[in-house]
Image (cartoon, rainbow, N blue to C red):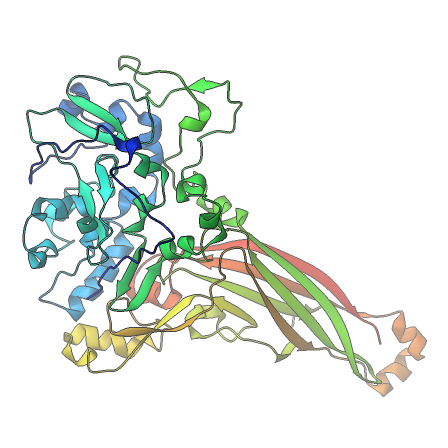
Length: 484
């Protein structure tokens, strides 16, 4: 079973009793709490302003198109969860601690075993809102006990019916909308710690998810730059004197605020592809190498992939996320030149396997087959086809990190590929004329390098019927001539 653990080190700490958080007092908390529905389709909620979108339509539109709103019902995630259930027919796992916290929280006071006992495919789990507005703004503090995972390590305020509801946020001067709700400032919302419990996780002592740890060790953390600086940047680039509001409903109390207090809730921005492209770069250099008197016989291509993101590795998050550098050299007729030295893409690259290039990914491998023998028949069958389809070990198996070729924050990866160039024979030169004439008729070659991002493994998408999302982040094309 995947066990989420959080590695907190002395580099980063948060004191929930700091002076900045004065005024956050214990409130009557209930095991059962009816979460605010972010959507507008609840007539009663809209009438009583108990839908987030009733007051914050712009924020709602950002959130509804973001992955946080889909954490509990993403079809591909549920297919992967189905695989866990095939391995463990009698267990539900602990995925819900991060993917469906609203379903978990009613059992907060139950035993540890009961806390995990939620089947994400059942109706109880489906009647939730993913990582919702209400859930995040109920976080009062983070328990830094590494044994408390996901939502189990978050102190969530769930107010009993009849008391004023409480929500927290990063504004020091919130406008109180009514006597039924109290908005409070909490400095936690300005720190990366608020993201930590679900963006770091381990299986035993093997760290599977490591985005928060990557940030802890990054140049960004050393400079005090938090996750929110990039993932919740001010909604618009505008002069400080331009005022706007976080409330869209004119009938609700609010105030005009400077743009830098109005943060986006599209965590990968409205254009995730452009956001990813912003933080990587690719440079390509070519040179020729003469190894005989017949001409330049080798074309050497050197590619440098730079991770310009100084907060975490590229790629980051789930080990399913991977990136590929693909290098191709073709002659004027479109034929591939032969690679004589350099890396080729492994089986995990799907239809690109064996092509010149490099895979950037964290690869998990299973320690032994004893664990597999304890699984259901469907799980055992999946193992037999996983290698064939280029699928690494799954997160919840007994695994170790076989390799991690991802590029660390603010670092670069350099790889070199050597291709064999065709050359004219002596008889060909004679037919064409003198060597000088051959110099005037060079052969032309096209060098193409692509940096491709993928949301999952092609083999896993094929087996599970999921959609392989593939983006070409950068493409560079150069022309080269082989002068004889």
